[in-house]
Image: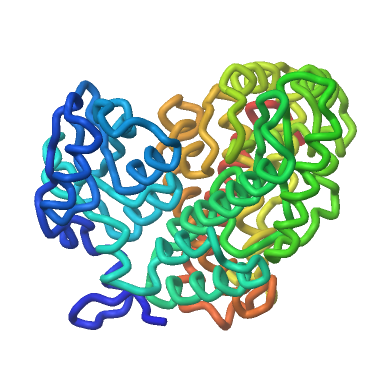
Length: 452
């Protein structure tokens, strides 16, 4: 497989190429009153796979929308506005290529309108991107629907290796892989519903931990849960959870040693709220871990609206006792000693670098009432709220990106740690700077809450 390279052949140049460089034609617009039949004819006449639909907000009608409309037996004389997708998902044409790919993978879209000054000026499609680079993740996204589960872990590891070697941003790789994993979960949920019948009550399939934060690169332990609106349907959701968790096992996701999987973390909303209240009030470490896991939740499947629940969980977590325990948790992983600027003989990027920054960012998200999930977004929100200085938030964010890349490098080599000798002088200096930033942030937190 090919790697991301520019026409000049510079490794990694394709990753930062503006996505607008791939746009080949201006998009076609159509009024929402046009019939679906006329829209299909217009697409065929112009040799395009989509039309932008006029409206406030505007939308898009693609070949996938057309196939879905026909498969459902809907009338072709219906107005286009009824068959199109709203609102329009778009990005500035100056967006780096890999960031645009991550955006498309996360949302499962195959057409991306491009903006300049708030106006749509171009369009790129899945085909444009795959034609550019056969290794791009959108190709794997399309294959997820029919890929044998046993081949998934190998495909993802190969993708990560290629992108990392090509100079792609480690955090963007994490977002890409999270999007691919989401697509796999949705496929498994769809297959389960076809086998079991429609769900008897709305549900939400959740991913937790690093996957919930979109920070997982290689396939680590499963962290998921299943919530449903009403009690009395346990047999259905037990069977659904078993099918999805079993599919993930077959795809290469190991079981969670702590039992954080939908086969065990599965309950109706009322029961979950009672459980969460108990976790936030109990000082036991296991209860604290469970509560923290759900502070990173992200819904990837099901039609249950969790927005009211998420707001309630955040408000509950802000109460004094739990917030105090959350602050102590953020101090649980101090950086290792670095006497005279020397790094430890074995550097563990996850334990020494990622853990403390993730825990600090999670604490400040709760403390400031931020709904953000990704660690970088949480740090920025904390800085805007005045809970962290702009400089500290920036240094922690840079450290997080560095440790994420080092973790990828270690894991692709089959290890959890790196020797400092394997780092460049610049990397060693940046690790020391990141450690200093973590010590500073932990010190401020300790003083603010009177912790020892």
